[in-house]
Length: 88
Image (cartoon, rainbow, N blue to C red; front, side, top):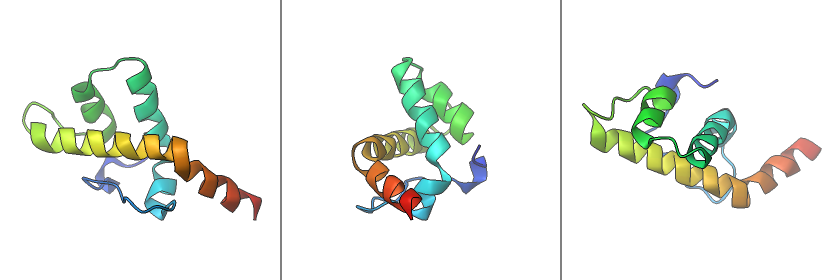
């Protein structure tokens, strides 16, 4: 599991898989699972990122939404780089 202190407020938006993405693959999976289960984003931000959405709502929402978007990017694009790198 990733250390909560290692999260950027916004993950990289590179068109290629980054070291940050590799380090946070389990986070991306947790976010996708939580979304699929209909979990409250505020609770997810607290549990995964350690950010209190009550006291720091704007940051919590940015971190949650941007990482969720990157998780979706991974399912549509980034996985290709992951597969390629595992074949070498």
